[in-house]
Amino acid sequence: MNDTDHEQQSIALLKEISKGQQPALEAFYQLYEPRVYRYALSRLNEPFEAADTLNEVMMEVWKYAERFEGRSKVSTWLLGITHHKVYDRLRKRKRAKLEDDIDDFSNQLTDDNQINIEQVLAGVDDANMVHHCMDKLSDSHREVIHLAFFEDMHYRDIASIAKCPEGTVKTRVYHARQALKNCITKLMVAMEPTA
Amino acid sequence: MNNQELKENLPWYVNNTLNDEQQAEFEQQLSNNAELKQEVKFLNALRQHVKQNISHSPGEMGLQRLKRQIKKESEQNSSSHKSITTWRTLAIAASLVLVVQLGIMINFVQREDTFVPLSGNNYSSSVIQVQFKSDATESRIRELLISIEGSIINGPSKNGLYRIQLKTDDDKIISRLRMQTDLIDFISKE
Image (cartoon, rainbow over all chains, first blue to last red; front, side, top):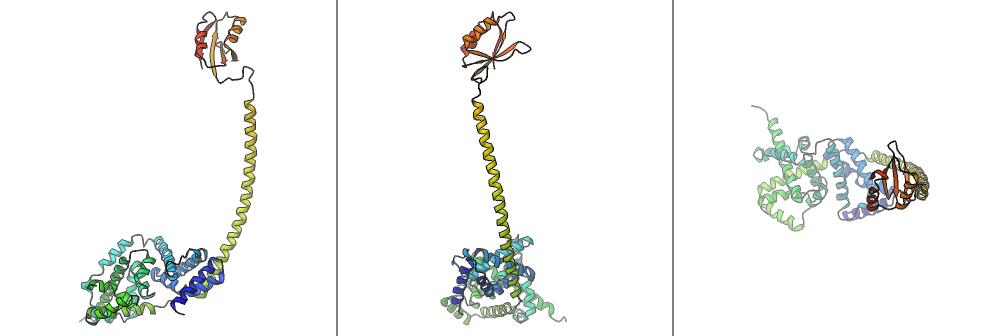
């Protein structure tokens, strides 16, 4: 199934869901469950909370499918709902209340002078190292990396989901990259054998 | 695009979401920019890791959970609807009681308006307090009350004060009464 067919099928399912057709919801769930779950997990870093979020998002779809107006792709609309649900959870955890401050803090960690690109390119092949460094990113940085590289989304769509300007998306991705490089460099240096 | 813009837009080149023209521009820039090439290598590796980081989603268990919740909420809504219906019936009954009660009260008030006190029909227009002379006779007091169209509505008090209802609120009557010094000791408007 190509992207257009997938989108048409999703829109048709949403119409059926808005009429209270539960089989349509089940089909919709099968189509989008992994993406919603992984996006929630990428931000929450907690499988149970991500599963709860998935359930909340699908309940929202069940109750308010008619709110989809076709102004964006179904996946963008759906991940936008997920973004809000995740944000509520993060706020409850009192982690997201100073998002800008976190961004600023992350930015301080991305000193280009500390980055050694040779070490980065050697370290980026190590999955464990990459995952360790991904976990160190702020929520907003993990979010844009996930949407850009797991979902392969255009920055316009990411901005729509994260409810921020497109320029902010680009800046966040840039700083996230730098933070990852910085982290990998530090790990590589730490692993170097001492003389 | 300058070098910084190129760096900022590289992720969208790597994830193939740029249009053909932008994609071509990157291809051209990459051919002679070693730094950009390294960056693309890094981003491709990163993208590969992100995609390979497969975590097991709830799958069928999640779907069963969702269906259970829908069923539960549906039952709750149904129960809530029944509860609302019961309360609505009670509320309507209570409203009817209030309407009936209000009707009775209005009827009572309206009937109260038709009450005519023995002392006169309108006792809210003007009331004066009067103390007659101790030797004032009943015939003179009656004559006075008739002349001013007044009615005794209360009294005498321990001090000998009478409250007299006048048909009209007319200061001239009070002035006239004050002239009756052989009959009245004290007069005051309430």
